[in-house]
Length: 154
Image (cartoon, rainbow, N blue to C red; front, side, top):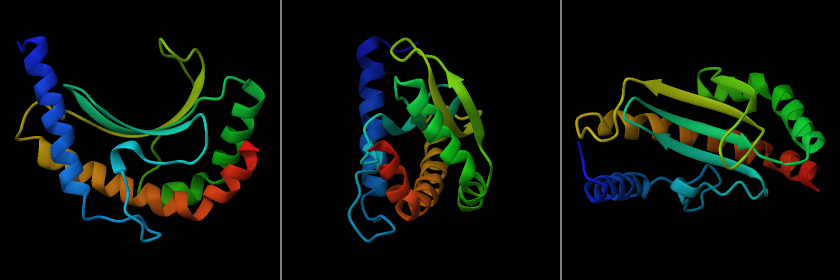
């Protein structure tokens, strides 16, 4: 069992190593990219990298407090589902109603791999490759369709 401090050090090392791993990869539009904090350019829309001791996931969250706005975004994403699925190489998990301590109701699309532990150095190359593949695919989709999503946010 790791101490709180040791766990913090492992977390920091993991994300620093991933940042270095992704540094040479540019967005599909040719710009340098901060992959760990992917810029959606839309308030309340987030792309998150989730790691735990049992799984890793790329999560696209729609967190508008206004249920109507959230529903419009969700509907638009469903309209784009085939394109997104083709780009990502798999459908992923579409969850219309998620809950967390900080956000009572939000929508999530996620792609995950179970059985990977980010604390095990032997799993890290597979985790990095998973995130790289999914981030590049998501970026290609997002750069193509983000103007439509930005328009919905106005």
